[in-house]
Image 1 (cartoon, rainbow, N blue to C red):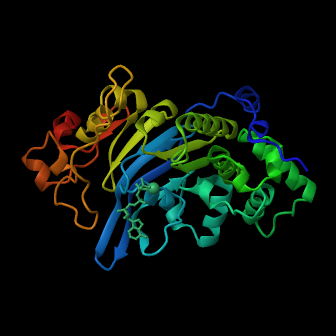
Image 2: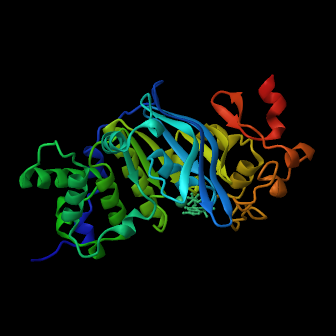
Image 3: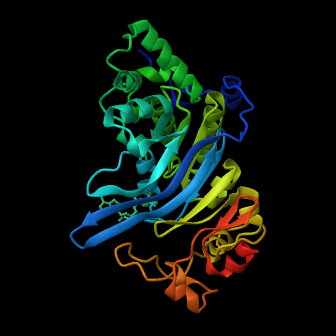
Length: 354
Ligand SMILES: Nc1ncnc2c1ncn2[C@@H]1O[C@H](COP(=O)(O)OP(=O)(O)OP(=O)(O)O)[C@@H](O)[C@H]1O
Ligand SMILES: [Mg+2]
């Protein structure tokens, strides 16, 4: 049998767009409310506070992007929202309210059902975890069957095939990809398959952890477009984990900046980009290469602290160009600046009070 080429298996963008319903909007309803969430890893050397007192709200239909450098706790937070934290990690405190229910309080069985019907995770590195010796169809079908409850009716072979075809089309691939093995697919196509597996049960909240890392720039954009259309088609909310500020800016409604296990700034994307508040966010945005002035990516001088030995004050203090006395002594709270803008920095204490 002649296998299709990669080009033949990819739907054109126009074809893919036609398969989606447009027009998902941010509503006033809270999809996810995270309050004071702390996730720690207990190690021989001490407690790693990988996610510390994190508080934010995601509205129904909203696209929230979580950014921060490597090791800042993004995956730790994402896994805790799915209640998939594994030892030596544990949820030390806080609540995660999904559609009105605190999932930290659910039984394992209730949590499993919730995970299946309401939440989807496209894990970090998902495209590299596909089974190399199994055809794509089997992997998607196994994903669906794994997701079925004991009391659910068993789908027929034809129904499963139809579902696989539908899922592949939704993620912008031709149904014929079902017959292929992972090594016959490009990186972007593998990531699309990982997304198809993730959304097989029509979740209301999609958590995608670095879905575009290791892909080239053009493919990154295509994957983000697909993710956006999937979200709109499902009327879902999305939490996108990434570290590429540029890519995130084009996708998200809201951005959350994480530093050393804490959310240090939250706000609407355009406003955070045009008027960043936290000195770390300013440096992150300032270090983005711009088209006008072609210069090297500058990076931020210094290193983030080890999460085992966090300083007494603000974790960014030793790298901060705007630091003053208080910063060494006291950890700043996340201050509400109004207009859905929040920042954890002593510079804004007065502004927040007034
Ligand atoms: N199982 C574990 N045991 C101990 N420490 C851990 C464990 N998993 C993660 N950590 C630590 O928790 C911190 C946050 O890790 P996490 O993977 O959440 O970061 P991240 O922001 O997702 O990074 P990246 O951008 O590299 O994916 C890091 O300091 C990491 O070393
Ligand atoms: Mg990660």
